[in-house]
Length: 596
Ligand code: O2Y
Ligand code: MN
Image (cartoon, rainbow, N blue to C red; front, side, top):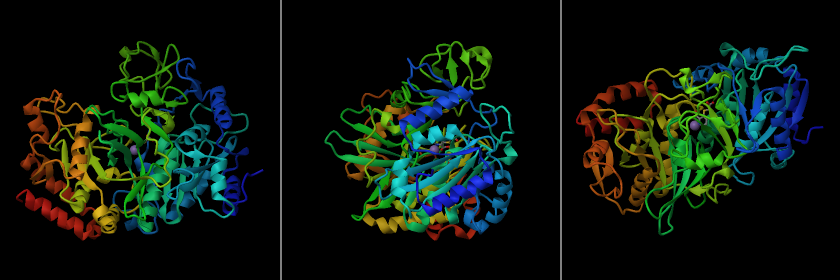
């Protein structure tokens, strides 16, 4: 029997059951017993392998189909009534047409499978900022992951009550089973049948054909960013692709920083930063998404809507991110990693080499195999509570007050280590023109540099130009309580291709300068692109960075910036007359300051 009397929910589950025709329906209660049972089921069916419990208790490894390893942006749709409301950065389809196409696919798609109903809450159960979603899926992998990255089960149905509203999220791997047909370890549909569809005007998500990450764990990118960004635009709050961290000075002053970086740019590493500067402390609140609302006192308060990390595995090590490594010591799900001979997991960039194992495609692997053992977008899923530096307030229902917005990207040239925006509008321009070099998180992005405004290019559920206007409007409402805006680039190289900045814990030096700027305690100099640290203002003591490298890290190559202007303007032109007048003013100011 269904564990709810919520009429909308009961009617929706009945409708989807009739459409998808599963063998059975299961309502998730979110208990540990349930998680263990579902994971054990995947081990027994051959969908996952248990990791050596003596090394990593209660953890499993999944290997996906080789064609289903990342978000697929070409198959991701924003289906608003008018095409211009989706804007040029989104794939658009008419909602009726898209539903017609997808209904045919959904018809009978869960035959031979169980339909799981996952009631989930994005944000702490007791937070006024949180939202409830219900994911229907036929994938036990999705159930197990959702139980880590969101709050699931009975407590959510209690908050929902008999009349509460929720965001329906329908997911199927798109691989029905004929009677007697044996399942494969990772069922999914061919690329041309995959659809990751969003209906922002009716707060609805339909995903079909992929079982992987952002395509399938619908609370994450689909709800908490694409649908939530459209809701936030309508309702006057913010849903952002941002980490949240607390940075505390030796005197005990707390600063809260929200930072947006494109996928796979070291966001999780920064969220779990261990400062090298004496006396400063960093605590993680979230590594991927921030929801922010203006509080009655006028401050902007942020929550992490998630309860778990879904981090990029390759490159994560005790050297690059010891806190992430500690977070995955137990109760973790691994996807597309190497299984070592002693049944632990491994990936490229881990501290110790691996001499032999089974690769992410299930084949014997050695370093001589000529291919990476782990997929470049291999992932770990682990509860936030397992991070040793999780902030004691990470689940505070009213969130934390944001002092600083940080934007950035991976740029080997041109962009200095840190730039402070002249003011909010200039900060919006810097964030809107942010760019990064290509990553592995999305399968289908071509070219080496991609403009990724606010790191929201793949995740803004409406016209990006209207999103910029929303940022301008928010500053009018925040007034003097608006956070300061900075832009960072940890990845600059010298002409010989050597990294100039050590990064990792040393990034704390840059954060300290920002905090001191907030308090008016550190000097900056004006340049044509923004304010940069004045000589001696950013603490470098004890750091092995030569004077020459430091000068290069902060060098403003006016000619290189000038050279980017036509491409920036071309990018902006794609949005036609939706570009906000305040953005046009910023574009004109940028030209003028460069002497164009
Ligand atoms: O490949 C995927 O489906 C996951 S993408 C992802 C996962 C966690 C955090 N961020 C991202 C992203 O693409 O920004
Ligand atoms: Mn992300």
